[in-house]
Amino acid sequence: MPIKLSRNDIAFGCISFLNDVSSEMIFPVLPFFMVAVLGLTKGQIGLVEGLAGAASYFFMGLSGYVSDRRGRRKDNVIAGYVLATLTKPFFAIATAGWHAVILRVLDRAGKGLRESPRDALIAEGQVERYRGRAFGFNRTMDTLGGAIGTLIVFYILLKFPGNYRPIFWISFFPGALACLLLVLFVKEKAVKATDEPAAPRRKFDWSKLDHHCKLFYIVTTIFGLANASYAFFLLKASSLGIVGSSNTLLYLVYSLVPAFLFFPIGHWTDHHGRKLALLLGYFLFALMAVSFTVTNQQMVWVLFALYGASLALTDGVTRAFISDMAHPDVRGTALGIYYGLNGLALFVASAMFGYLWDNVGYNFPFIVSGILAAIAGLVFVIFIIHHSYCRRRGKTPFCEKC
Image (cartoon, rainbow, N blue to C red):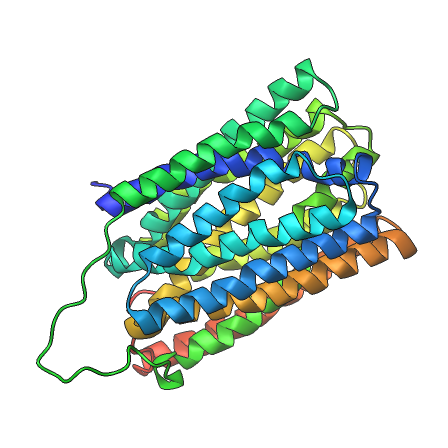
């Protein structure tokens, strides 16, 4: 069966690969850099990660809306990639905790600027029949790049234990190459001329946002409250004695598992619908999070693999599902609203996780995370029943297969 990827799908895949080589060189070491070098506590890390995530998702919402209004998306995507890339070298000269706050917020703001318009470009370049595999391919290349970046970090730390700053300098170069590929190879469809008089571009209209999409936001926001920063899972592994380069390999497991699963899962959802994959992802995450309270050095490797599998079942599939349900005129905004709500949820989740870790114990936040993910799964069951009923009655106008 042909893969049916467009030129933009392939270009964005290569860009995501290079950008994540850059980003994932930083992510495995950042929590330890903030603790060991900048002197932050677990609670402070929770606030830093929460603010960074909130900034990311706020700009995802804003950027999606702006790209819909302007009828242009590529400019926002370029601005986002460039901003995130330019922050990388400054981590290498950071000396205080507030430096980490500013740089993490700017880095994630760059991610926010690019994410919604990029996903809208991917969705607009594919018919619904192939949309799942388009998002799956992008996420696969993204995570493969992350795996390469993690291996580079593993080698550096193996040769120079605890020497974090050169990693930040090196990470700039693949990010810069990704920006160059974006400018040269991604094409945006020109807006077709009409005989109608000029009018303001695509003002947001709530009636174009299917009510099932609005209901689905409730599910994703509850799950977002469960899905705190990956940094806490790495710190938990560190408390079990998995440190240094071994911790980097653990992060590699988390990256590689979804790299192999994103595309086949996206392809499967194109033919069988998105709901079952999402439902499995929510409950798998719940099981994984609760299991972190009883894990040991051997079991934690399996749990990080399950962590990656839950990501593969929920991340790209959620984007495709929202793209399916949203009217094309407000698709960027619909994705942006999803990202904005998740940013708020991530801020609350990370701040809560860090507070509970410092004040109650390092196992309790994982229990809370698992319970919230299970609640998201149960609410999604109700959504599935309602959505299926409306489909039979022809009340899902923008979503043919979801």
